Length: 355
Image 1 (cartoon, rainbow, N blue to C red):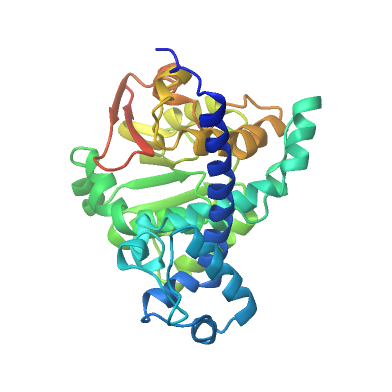
Image 2 (image 1 turned 180 degrees about the vertical axis):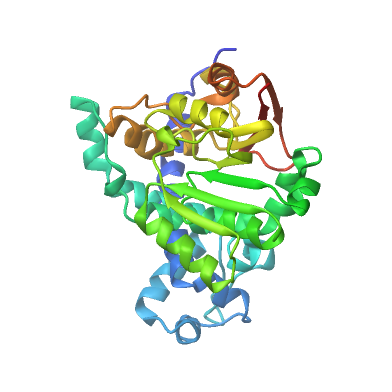
């Protein structure tokens, strides 16, 4: 497959102007999410900027300018005669916390977050190397917010049932590990749903592990534990019946060692459930990916660079299904099934076992 013809000068100029407007709107959508404005507007009738600011406990002048961006961006509806603004319900369905995993405003936060390291990324273009994970202080919190809504909505009823018979095994009681668990919400969701099973979360982030332990304690989850562990050095042999990773492989320094360690850590008959980015390993096959530019950008400015900063492989978020299956095979898995969920364009699920 080859890319379609290049746009003419006028067409391309229009596209560039459109890009600038959309990029600016993404930043303003992030601001609106963080300030709670979409949630406030969704719960009230058409109102003036002063009324919206008062309801959100925010400064009116800033709210008024934000509303102007939202109005010209056709996200908010403005009644000039009444001087009011409203958020249509069909827009609120994609912009509020009540929307759960459909809340695109959460993803808009990545724009501002990645912009913080732009200077360092440009420097890496010139000298090589990478930007370390510590340069992204808010990344884990954003990932927790982003993935948390997904886990709450789909982990128990959609994701885990992808593995035949797994839910029944979890109900009876098995040993489970989540590698690269971040803030541990997936572990805690599973631990709450399956009290007879035992869950371990491994991550290298002290901040993430502290959040995971605090959540487990709040929810009284005695069957969940969290340990600081290098994903490339799990050091476990035949210890777990199920191991999961959720978007945790592609940004590792040594994903090959991580996958090999996971294979060794499984007991006979154990299952590895790997959720990662749905994409092809061939760029030409990603031309029509609905999130292609977004995911390649996140890859360049976070996933790839944090791996390279550790002297790693720099696999990148768009490593693709072909490369994933190849690496799983090299790690020792003999049966690898790829599953897609209808309506989920971002994730592919690899179900892997070994003899």
